[in-house]
Image (cartoon, rainbow, N blue to C red; front, side):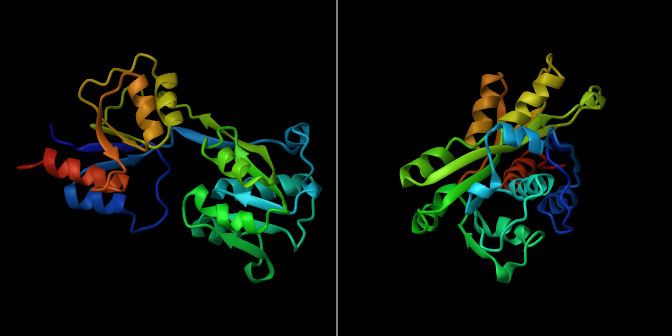
Length: 249
């Protein structure tokens, strides 16, 4: 069956040269964006209830742009003056670059990983005497604690923000040929909003093994999977599928 409409369960990209827009133009398909989940900040009061005092830490581990935003938000709510000597360990260049929104780069001690959390292990090991704070969501990635525990460093995780399922009731009567998911919570949000959802001819695209597992546990048929060696991104996986499905259009 041909693909004419796709719903991507994420916010619309802010860059003009997004591969999604190229996909749309090249294959003449309609691509809509709608976050199935969103992030809500945890109050400074609730962070304090976790027995977290920002004065006790000498280094911050930042895994995402959300962790950057919510660390500085909580710091402001707590009236904590962020010291110039604080060290920042950023999971990727994108996170480190985003940090410039809050600090003057050249005046700060910033250490940058390659991409995955495990890539930061050698950096953190060099500074194993620091006291590390990991501002995270309520759904901390399972591969994080083992990495830090194995390094035998003094670290604390704090829930600074939560992942919440969005209200999708306005989509009740809307049909898409393809639904694209990027997290297990996105799948959960689909079934929370539409408990009687039946896949029928809807193609399901998933990114990552945990999303795949959640989809299968909900009885979904997975038609498009990323990343794979051949299609390392969701847009590449979608393009390959669409090119095949829309042959002779």
